[in-house]
Image (cartoon, rainbow, N blue to C red; front, side, top):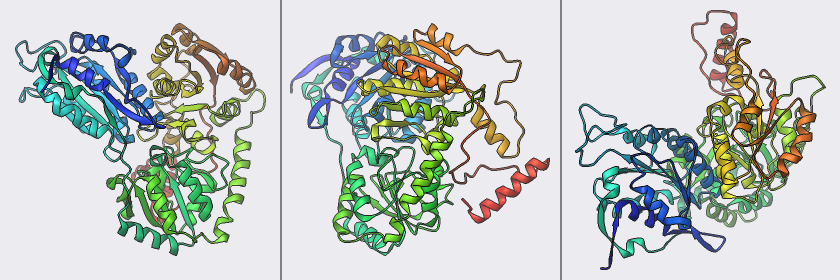
Length: 608
C-alpha cells in the first residue's frame, strides 16, 4: 500500500481539499475554504498546512471566531447544504467562541466543520496557556463544550485516528438527516506529529447527497389521509430548499389546488406571487396563511422541524390531521404526525403519482386568492412611507428596501423584531433570495451571515437588515467584507436598544426595564463607526432619504452601511398567531393581572 509521510495537520488539510460535491452536473470542491484565526494551538500545525494548500483550499481570516463560523454556516445555507466550510481556532477562548455558532448550526441542521486546537495530548507541559483544567478528569478540555452542540465530536490523540474520524465527520456533514456541525479537536502536539498516510485516503472523493424514497406503507397512509381531506394545507420548510424541491412543490400545489404556507426557513420555496402561496405561517405569519391553517383538516408539513413559531405553540392547526414529510425521522414523528420519512422532492413525486386525479375541493382552493389579496393590501398599507416627521417603523424600512431590491438579491437577517416583519411582509422571488436564521434566533449572525451568503453567491447583491442591538454585538466582519472585496449593503435600524424584547416585556404585563437605552446613554454614531471599519456609510433621516440612498448603495462596489432611526414601540399587529410565553402566576399589579388572565384564556382554549 502506497503511503505519504505527512503531519496530522497536513493530512487533515489535504483530505479536506480532496473532497468534492456535484452541483448542476459539475464536480466542485465540497469545501469552499477554511476560516482561520491563528493562535498557539493551531498556528504551528494547521497554519503551514493551510498555507501549502493555497487555492486548492483557500484560507480566510476573520476578526471574531463566532462570526467566522456564522459566515461558514451562511455559506452552507446559501448553497442549500451542497457546499460548506471549515473553521479553525486556538485552544482557549477562540475555540469556545465558536460554541454558539455550533449550536446555531445544530438547531438549523446545517453543515459546519470545526477544527479547534486543543491541549497537549501527551500532557507534558500541562497546564498550558489557555488550558481549562477539570480537577477530577484530566481528559476534559474546553473543547468538551462542543459535545452537546455537535452532531459528531472527536478528539484526536494519535494521528492515525484521522483515518477514521475525518470520513466519519464527512458522513455526518453530507447526510441529509444527520446534517449538523462536526467538531474534531486537534491537540497542538498531535497536529505536528508525522505518520504514514495511505495515498488512497487523500484521493479525490465525490459526495452525492442521498435522496431517500418513502416507505410504501407510509406513502399509502399519507395518500389515504390526503384523499379524505376536505381542507388540506401544505407547509413548506427548509427541507424543501435543501432537497431542491421547489419546482415539485409548485407543481403539486397547483395541480391539486392546495394552498402553501411557508416557515422562516421555507420562505421563498414558492415565489411570493405564486397562486398557491398563502404566505408565512405561525406566530410571525400572514393573516391569509394563518386563517387557512385554523380551518384546515389536514396539514402536510414538508421539511420543517415544526417549532413553536410554526405551530403557534401547537394551537394554530391543532384540529388538523398532521402528515409530516421529512428526511429526518426525528422531525417526521413530532406532534403525533403520520410520518413519511423521505427526501422532499422524492416524497412529493411519489405523492403526485399516487394522487393522480385528486384535487382539493374547489370551494377550499377558491379561498386562497381572496385571502391573499386582502393580505397583500395589508402589506402595501403597512410598508408605505410614513408622514413627514414621523419615525419610520421596521415594516416601512423593509418595504423601502424590498422595493429597491434587485430581483436576484438576497436579504439576510436573524434575531429581534425584524425577522417577524420580514416573514410576514417580505416578497421573496426565489429560494435563495430569503436568508433568515431564526431556528436559533441568534443576535450577531446578520453581518457575518451576509458575508457567507456573498461568498457563496458573489454575483448576487446581498442586503443585510440588522438592528442596533445586533450591530453592537457583532460588527467586526464589516472590516472582513471590505478586506475580501465581498461587498454588502447593510441597512441598520437604530431603535435605541432591544425594541422587540421591550415590546414582549410590556405585552406580558411587565414595565419597560433594561431593554431600551435611557436618556443618559450616549448616542452612537453608527455611520462613523462603520466608516472606521472601512465601509462607506451614511445616516438617513427618513424613508424618502433611505429610498434615495439605496440605489447608489446597491450599485456600489464597497460595503455600504445605511443607518436609519426607527420607532422602538411599533410593530405590525396584523397577522400572527399566539405564542406561549409564560406570564407570572402571582400578578402584582393591574397590568400583570390582565396579562395573566389573557394567558390562561389562550392556553386553555388554544386560541390563535
